[in-house]
Length: 255
DNA sequence: ATGGTAGATCGTCTA
Image (tube, rainbow, N blue to C red; front, side):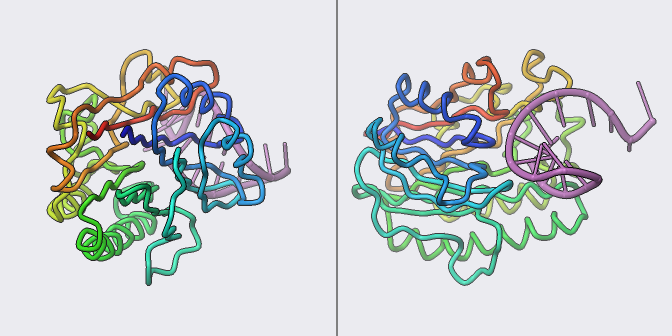
């Protein structure tokens, strides 16, 4: 089973990219972030024609998440239980015998800002939720745009992206480590120890051409799934396509 | 030098 995460930065714009990538990559489950679509505008009919069922939770202009799957998803959860949030950043569902949690983590703007405080509170709420979720679902995949680069191998310039910078700050990385301590494993790092493998490149400063990126899109697998994770990767070629998302799909394959 | 680009929306916010 191939499970992927992709921040599409507007599904309205990126639907042709998604269709092309679904055809070539042929994932079984996909978590999308930044769909930027109200639910009545979600292209579920077109995706069904390609063999994918959709569950989604969106809003216009900002945020928006979805889970696509070849077999129907059940027990759909919208948002973090008990955490009031107008921003549509979370959807979870069960596909077959695997629980999928799809997160569009708060960006945080800059260290010390109100949005940064919101990011840390939000991550704490996710931690509390996943602590329960892992007990209910030993086969757990937590994926999404984490807006945190796990370590220095995951940034093009560790001097710039340091422990006081947004997306790499000490508190953000500590929050991510706390999630991993629940018994989750970075699927990509089970198969690749190299530095310089990124999933996001800023649109500015020709960042992709210069490989000035970060790896912030993650697929985490639970203890029980770890021995079943046979491959992982990032489909960076999508970033070379015309009018691309600034993120590339990150995926794992489970036996 | 507080820039640059993209998306949604149409002046300005978010990333």
